Structure formats: C-alpha cells, structure tokens
Amino acid sequence: MMKRPHTAYFRFYEELNDFLAPAQRRQTLCYDFEGHPGIKDPIEAFGVPHTEVDLILVDGTSVGFNHQLQPGERVAVFPTFESFDISPLVKLRDRPLRHTAFVVDANLGKLARRLRMLGFDALYDRRYRDDEIADIAALERRIVLTRDRRLLFAKRISHGYWLRSTAPDEQVREVLNRCDLWRQIRPLQRCLMCNGVLEWVSKAEILDHLQPKTRLYYEVFFRCAGCGRIYWEGSHVADMRERYLGAALAAKEAPE
Image 1: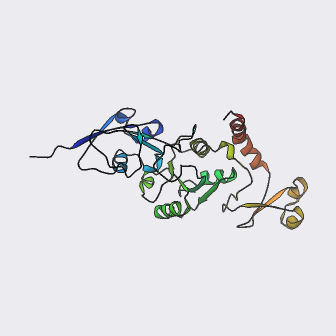
Image 2: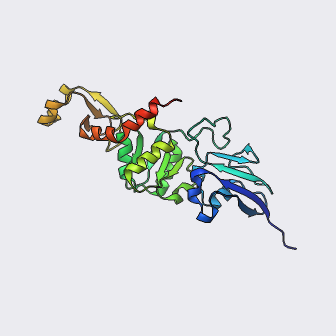
Image 3: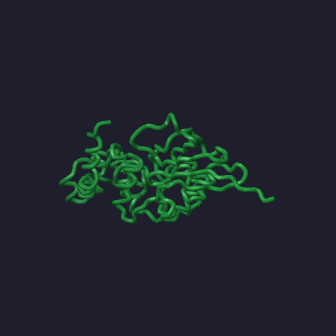
C-alpha cells in the first residue's frame, strides 16, 4: 500500500509574495510531504530565499529554521519588520536583520557607490564571484544586496535582500526603506571608490593636492584612510542632499 503524504498549510506575507508564482500569492498554499522535513526546505521550495524571512509562526508560535514540519500545521511566514520590534518573538537567528553593513553583488556598482555616498559600509568589487560574496557575508555578517535571487539561497548567507528595481536611485530607496536606514544617513563618511573610512584633514596638509578653484572655495576636507583620496562638500554632496536628505529629515522628525 502506498504511503499517503502529509499536508501542511503555508501563507506568505507582504513582499515575500514577490517570490511566488502569481497564482500562489496572498493565499494559503498546501505543501505535501513525507517524514518531518526542516521548515526551511518547504519555504525555499516555494521560491522564497531564507534570507528574506524574519519571522515564522507555526500554529501561532515562533519557530526557527530547524523546526520539523508536522502534519496539519499552519505556517505563517513574514519578512523583516521595520515598524516595530519583534525581537522577543523571533527564533530564527541570534540577532535580527539589523546589521547595516553590506556586500553588494558584482552587477550593482552604482548602488554600492550611492550607499557609500550616504555613509554606509558597502563592500563591492565587480570581480566578486557568488561564492566569494557568500563567504564575505558569512564571515563579516554583512547583508547581501543582489538582483540574483538564486544567490540568496546559499546556506552561508543569513542576511540578504533581493532588489526589485533595476534603477539605481530607486534601489537606494528600497534598501533605505527595507532596512529602516533613513535616520542613519551620514554623508562624507565613506570613500566612494574603496569604501574606506573618511577622516578630517587640515587644508594646509593637502594644499598641494588641490586644484586652484577648490583651494579658493572650500575649507573643510576629508581624506580616505584606505586609498588617500581627498573629499570635500562639492556639487555631488549637494545633489545627494536634494535626492535623499529631505526624506531623511522627515524620517528623523517623525514620531517614534
């Protein structure tokens, strides 16, 4: 006699539906199985990377990825919450998805540069292979940013985000919204080229490296501790302020 498979019932919420087939979105889905698989396996079988998940409720109780699925269980799967603190509930990781250092996939150089301009730690090298990105993310506890959802299925990656947009400025807004970073924008903190930390440097110390107009019009300078490049608050910073800092100011003034 053939063994009948068991069934459990899954529901994915908010942007996790982006990973599902259109016919599966925003509804309860049946999952047939034998034995007692870890709950991470059926979640990824539906096409949702584990890196996008921040809370799993089984029959109303928070569980980790090692929970063994039982017949008849009802599973609710949620993405990262930004509007309130769910840390007392979460059983997936030893800390929530709040580490604001990134490793950016090789096809997203413009995004990496913009994040650095806003003051965020964003490792990027167009030569990075997928396995190198996974290693860096695991070793340094960095959030992977990618347009390749397959990369986020790598077991070594615990923090990641699949970008929906292909436009760099919109990608920046996605990351700021997803990780709730509007209040953390700090211009002139990171080198746009190497991601090194910028340090204040006196004008007199670098005077010989400045163009005549730069010497005339600017007084405050920063130098990258990594590659030595010199920065000042020029037109690129003004442009950045116009694009992002208005929204950042609104976020800071918003009630908690």
